[in-house]
Length: 230
Ligand SMILES: CC(C)(COP(=O)(O)OP(=O)(O)OC[C@H]1O[C@@H](n2cnc3c(N)ncnc32)[C@H](O)[C@@H]1OP(=O)(O)O)[C@@H](O)C(=O)NCCC(=O)NCCS
Image (cartoon, rainbow, N blue to C red):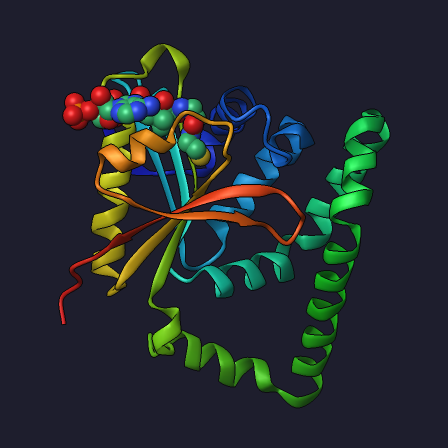
């Protein structure tokens, strides 16, 4: 097994793995088509941390998603892929009414506000030519002190391959990438119902506590200090 960056050719397999392994997660219930596009959006957006663990036949046995600059990554993903992803969620909501009800109850307002902000920001960039300046700034690698925290959002290993060091290898590779990116810390959240909490503690992550997401869901937060050069 090796760990390498997640590629566009992996998306079919990575989205199926996501659907099967994290089946209780809201996004996973958005369907494979949505997940495929979600993974594509993830890897096509700057600052992504997206890794695949593959077997001898280059088949996907594990996936890790995260970001070295979560806010910037989220904003860019929303800007470039937000409407496409929202459309696919809407289709799934029509197919699966219980998913639709949850979408309306927990996310509609937040997603609509995000889309509006993204639209206004795009228009403002167009009018003032701010975009070019900002891209120059963003490409320079000088971010505020608060931006030196990376995030891991998903870790999944295929059921038949658990217990073989794949999850650990994915997290280790993410840690190395985060240190190379000059980050001070990695943060990770997981759903309270998953047994993976002891897994993270076993690998040296510190449990910070329970939180409530902006969509009203409970999750548990873990942190890992990094030893970045400089
Ligand atoms: C949790 C998960 C990522 C672990 O991956 P894995 O490949 O099975 O774990 P590994 O084989 O790499 O285990 C690494 C170490 O952690 C230990 N470990 C594994 N699962 C553990 C658990 N639930 N509790 C405590 N320790 C655990 C292993 O014994 C091993 O210890 P060692 O290095 O001292 O020998 C995987 O089981 C999974 O995908 N679960 C479902 C999805 C999920 O919960 N994802 C996390 C939330 S996003």
